Image 1 (cartoon, rainbow over the protein chains, first blue to last red):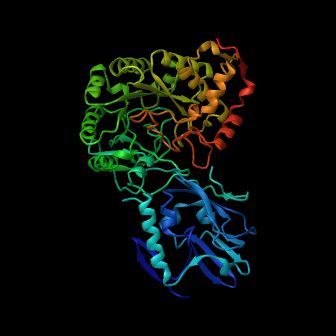
Image 2: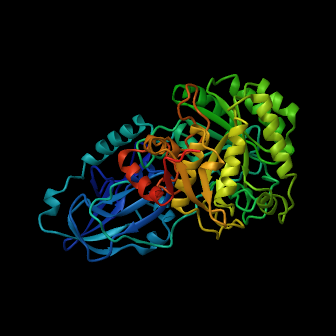
Amino acid sequence: MERSQWAKVGGYRMRTDLAYDSEGHMWVERLGGGRVRVGLDPLGLEINGTLAQLAMIPVGTEVQRGEPLGSLEAEKFVGPLRAPLSGVVAATNDTVVENPGLVEQDPFGCWLVELEVLPGSVEDAELVEGPSVPGWFAEQVQEYRDKGVLAE
Amino acid sequence: MTDLGAPVELRAGPGRRELTVTGEGPAAARVSPDWVRISGASAMALRFRSGRFGRELASGGINLLLNYEEGCRSDCAYCGLARTRPGDYEDKSFIRVEWPLVRTDELVERMARAEDRLTRLCISMVTSPLAYRHTCVITEQIRSAVRTPLSILVAPPTLNRAKLEQFHELGVDMIGVGLDAVTEELFRSLRTEVPAGGAGLSWTKYWSVVDDARDVFGPWKVNCHTLVGLGETDRDLVETFVRLREREIFSYLFCFNPEPDSRLGGRPKSPLRRWRRMQLVKHLIESAGYDRDNFGFDAAGNLELLRGTTSEVEAAVADGVAFMTNGCPGEQGEPGCTRPYGSYRPSEQFRDFPFRPEPGDMRAILDELALDDIFEREVRA
């Protein structure tokens, strides 16, 4: 099994060996055989404030990219977790649904959903990966700082 | 409500976390006046904490809460800070939201920097022998650095008229009194005759502080918090709204939402229909001069009739202000203390709106009100 690669960007510890949905701040890990694991990156978590509840759609549901895989409720915010790729939900992580605080402790260690990716979905997705990740993420951090969403 | 896209069945676990003060380490020595708690929304507004609101809204109200090792000496049946509510004081929530602990001097510095975005400041006292003196210290600290109007939500057992006069001299603009329970019997059972002792909370004392505050601060500079859902009747609420209006005192309505593990933790939250109707009734009494005769009740005291002119009532509903958060205003009379998501979860319908309801909100409000069931038109008393 390959070792994870990490970098510190904008004050956050990021995995640079994963792909990221450029809008929803979901990370995507390719598991092989057309299956991916999806989770929330640390910025995607922090911008919402203290996490209160996670909800996922049932296994077997087909979603198109951008549609809700579930929802996230925080102290003062509620919103959808949008699918970074089109696919069929193959598994959901019931442990984090029951204890959402785990995701805040370890966003990369806590996947939310596994998807069986639909043909052509990866090519259509707007994923950031490889050497682009640190630069893209640093810009995102600055954007949210400018909006006043991040603590000083 | 946030658009979640196509309707799908969501599977939520039992894992709803009750949010409490966390991540600050031991709070033992961090007490007022050097330290205060601030509401989650205040912490976000001043960037002590990361986060955003579910709807686009600006929140310029900053709410402070005194903090003591022994906590609040009161033991109110519905309150998150009640002495007999299980858990350490520093881990307790208050009106169901987190209150992070911050250094007072850093808070004042941040408020001064953010002054142009702030609309109203409020210090909430707790029942403690130190509370009055420390409220004065913090008030002076704030007044020397920030111009934003300042309210105090007082702890009546700690006060008398002279102390209220001192608050006024220090530059406090408005006084709030958390009466909460609107009948003497209810007040006594929930706040006075309680397991840990009443700590000086009495119906008579609360009303004497209301009267003194009204004398000292003037008309429409005092507000009384009234909770809908503690076991009172609609008639009790109407009587209270009229009584306060006659003295030129605001009623600030709060919707009961059970605090987990409090003695009323198992009591259901106020039904939305009743809540919406009480919002409208209070608004008509306070802003349109409606009186007891405009309302009819069944034998149990439930509202069953609203008598009024169609144009007046329809205008009051359509205006939307009736359904906004009751809070002290900003300097120019704009909404000041809006407490977004203070008594409802972000995933629930707004109980009180921290902004003027939008057309989609108004459609929901009309459904919730079901006004045709109680409205007897054109019979303004």
